[in-house]
Image 1: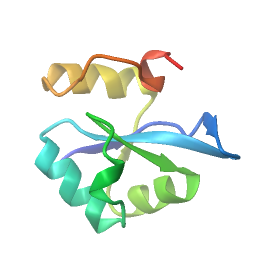
Image 2: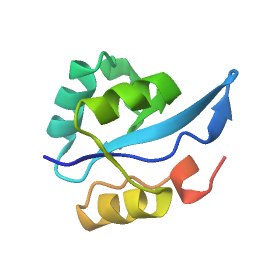
Image 3: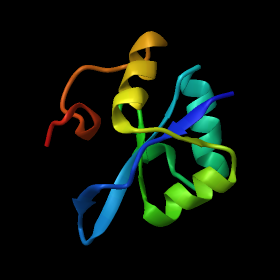
Length: 92
């Protein structure tokens, strides 16, 4: 199981946000996200957005911190990257 989380550096609604992904499967990602209290409705196509506090919980629960480029690279390598606007790709 490899759950990845990048830096919380995208501002929105007064908080900084990061991306939570799996480089194995969406099922793994959904199970992990649920275990840290994320609702399935928060799934963004290939990731969950997590704020700074949720990122810390994810790290304490076994997620691996990576930079945004590595996160996207590993998503693509696993065939799990969805095209479209993404902060991790530098989009708005």
